Image 1 (spheres, chains in turn orange, cyan, blue, green):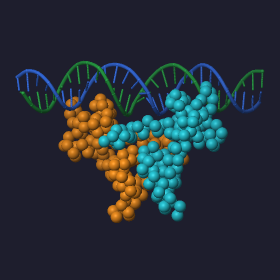
Image 2: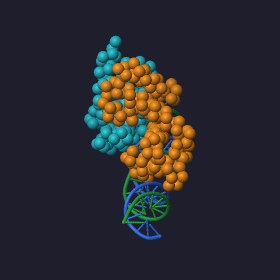
Image 3: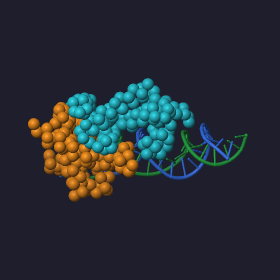
Image 4: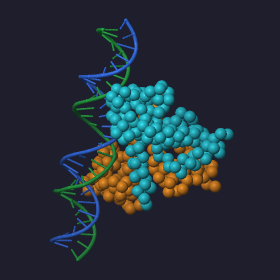
Length: 137
Length: 137
DNA sequence: CACAAAGTGTAGCCTTGGCTACAATTTGTA
DNA sequence: TACAAATTGTAGCCAAGGCTACACTTTGTG
């Protein structure tokens, strides 16, 4: 059994990328909504202190996902934008799948948030199929 | 909007209970499989050092989920057993749902592992319905 | 312009969940 | 029984992700 397929190993690795995905996704959304993304915006969105955001953003800057200078707005690098777009796409698919399945949109939103980081490509593809086949009815 | 329904707040809370659920579930399974559950068994199952297991187990003992004395086997309290059973049930439902959807059993196993802690009661109920309707075909 | 308010940064602390290295205990067996 | 192997425990380290308190910039407005 490969390391990737060992359930808890995969789950742990997923957790390590979750924060990055959540942040780049949120940054992209905030930029689309209000033009620029600031620390406070993320703090509100994640219901977390501005300090936590600052620390996380600087880690993601080190990781090459975000760009930012002191007191400046938060920006996406090319790498970050790619990840953000992929992440939003996954999120959208999971959400639409749940709705197609008959879940309330508010519940679907919360569940999609939690599930999106743990759905494999194979499952995601099936979700997409399902939505295409019986979602647009 | 209630605190519970705020996506990231819910997700964070889920993460806090994930470890407890994973552990009690594993303990119950190991006990069923080999009679008793020891630190090494969990270390193997989670692909983690025995030290990590020891620490986590003692935290869960403090939390009232597990019972254990020095060098002894790991046991479930009533509270722990209740959680373990509920957790296994969720896991089973998510797994069966994925399989009913056409996912490979090995992928379903990994995905269920990651997803089970993030699926609401509402969604779980729909999963169950789905399996009942088209799972046993 | 000056000052208040809003936004950020920094210091320092906490818990969780990882680890290695080494000590101690239990268990199995020659 | 005594020793080796297996299992656990303990010390001490690290990173991530939370926080409060306090300092410093930026921004907005009288």
